[in-house]
Length: 87
Image (cartoon, rainbow, N blue to C red; front, top):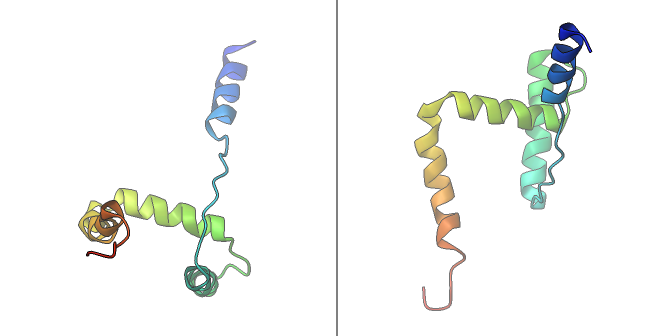
């Protein structure tokens, strides 16, 4: 294997996709669908996949640390668990 072939192979391996599954409530799915349709229109893409929107939201959130405190506030109740009868 040449050096160029090794680099090419490494580059291909680095782009391997990993499938995840996200269970959404119907309202969250409608929000994702509406957002995807809206972003498709704004970006001039006739078709935009939900996966493309998820990937860009992930990158945008990771790159913009100013969003992290708001995200933490939304996630904090999840760490506390569901409400119980005595709370």
